[in-house]
Structures are given as structure tokens and as C-alpha cells.
Amino acid sequence: MELVHILVTLLVAIAGFLIGRRIGIPVPAMIGSMLAVGIFSAFTGFALMPTPIKMFSQGISGAFIGMSVTRRDVRNIPHMVKPLIMLLVMLTANTIVLGFVFHLVFGWDLMTGLLSCVAGGIADVSLIAMDMNADASTVAIMQTIRLASVLAIFPTWISFMTRDQPECEHEPLDMSQEGSDTILDRIVNTPRKRTVFTLVVSVVCGAAGYMSGVPAGALLFSLIGVAALNLTTDATRMPMSIKRMAQVLAGSLVGSTVTPDTISHLGSLIGPIVIMFVMYMFVNFLFSLIASRTGMLDMRSALFASSPGGASDMALIAADLGADLTKIAVLQIFRAAYAAGIMPQVANLVVHLAEGAL
Image (tube, rainbow, N blue to C red):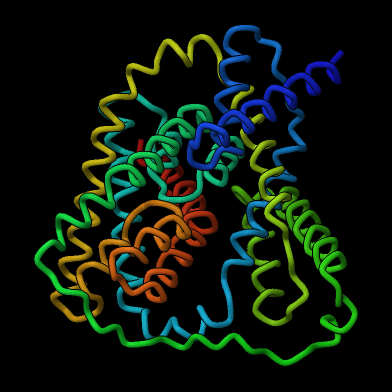
């Protein structure tokens, strides 16, 4: 009987993805499937996804983040280390402050409050929430609204903030990506072999992380393992179709946790959503003001680099507004890796310290 539940849940998730893609919602594989399964689960209670899917989805998510970190990005870190450290410190402080506000003012458990404010990917953070006993549906809703709000509002906000500023001459960073062939490159030498190899590595690393007991270990270990390979070889490859499959599975997992009680409490999220968005705009403005006045970045590039949206989304929008794409990409990529790999450990530490203080 469980198999029937799982198959029906997958069919509903795929339908949600296809409908979401058709109507143009952001990240349709994750959001579309999550909404479809969530509604289905709330009204029927029939949705079911097995827990091991979480490990697989985390492993794939970690692999994609790891593959986004390239040799070029690492070589450019010395040029970007000051704004990168400042951005990560400000985002970490923002997450901790908001997490406690949501905990103390709105009565959320602290872990849910912290993860709801992490500026990471929707699928990544939602899967992490399931791993760390947070309210995954609340976290997913907050993350979805954050991304949608950033994509809808931040381009206009940035255009307004830089309306009187001319386009700047940008100092080029190192754009070379060459690396020497390794034995692994010569063995894993076709696209299919690279895809299979990367999948195996991500699943093995994910399983090791899952069994380690480290919070969000499946995603963290996969991220580190695939990033290390990506920086030293050319043997990694992951088609977008696999990422979409993992996102559909992640959306199904999160959606299957939705209950009628979740739907009835949606109205209570309005206050936290408004507070979160205002705080992100404040961090975005403060970082950009400091970075521009100290000469680390021009104002336009700093605003895009510190926008809590997807790295690819921000880069595409920035290309139309004359910002420095290479610097934005470096900051956004490492911000995403930090959010997925380090922030869960920070959240876990904060929760343990808070519990110990009581």
C-alpha cells in the first residue's frame, strides 16, 4: 500500500512541476512540486515519501553546489576576501537575530526560526530543515517567499538606489579555467561516464555524511567531495535534468509534511515575512554602502552581490544593469556554499548554546 502512496505522490509532484514551469514560477521543479504535494497532502493525507529520498536529494544538492565552485573562483578569492568575509558575517548575524526574534516574539522553535532566514537555496535549506527536526513546511514557505520577493522587488530597488550613478569600469578578475589532465580525467573521459561518476560520488559522500550524524551531513559531505574533485579534475558533470529530478523529490518530501494545521497557520507568517524582507533590504543596503565607500566594490555590484537570491538569477539581472558580473558571481557562489555547508552547523551551535543557557 505504501508503494501506491509513493507513486501517487510522485505523479502529483511531477504534475506540479510541469504546471509550475508552464506558468513561469521560479524554481518550478521545487516550488511547483512542493505546492502540488502540499495541497494534496493537506486535503487527503495520502502523500508519502520515504525518508531515504532525503539523503539522495541532499547528496545531489550538495553536488550541484560543489560543482559551482571552480578553480577560477578560488583563484579570485584573494581579490574578494574582504567583501566576502564582511558579507558572510552580516548574513550570519542577520540569521541569528531574526531566528531569535521569530522564536521569542512569534513562538517558533529556534531551529525553524534560524533556518527560515538562511540565504540559501530553497531545496537545500528545506531538506536541511527536515534533517534538523525543524518545521520543514514553514521553512520552505519562508524560503520560497524570500526568493520570489527578491526576484520581484530587488531589481527595481537596485535600479532606484543606483539611478544617478554611471556605469563603472570594472577591474577584470582572473577568468582562466585551465587545469592539467589527471589520470582520473583520462579514465572518466566521456559525458556519460562523468555523469555516472559524479552521481556515485555524491551518493557515497551523502551516505557517509548521513551516517556521520553531522547536521545536514549528507549535503555537506557531498558538497565537499564534489567540490574537491571539481577543483582538481575535469571528471565531474551533472546534467540539469538530474538537478530537476532531485528538486522534484525534495519538493515531494517537504510537501508531504504539510497538514491542515499548516494551511490554517499561513496567515501567521505575514509578520515574520515582512520582518525578514525588511532586514534583508537593510543588510543589502548596509553592505553595499560600506563596500562602495571603502572601494571594495561599486554600489551597483555590491547591491547585486549581497542580494539573497539565486546566484544565476542575480547574475542574469545584473548583466542588464551594468554591474561587475565576475565579482558578483564569486560572492554569490561562496555565499550559497556557506549557506548550505556552514550555516546549518552555526544554527545547530546556536540552538545548543541557547538550550544550555536556559
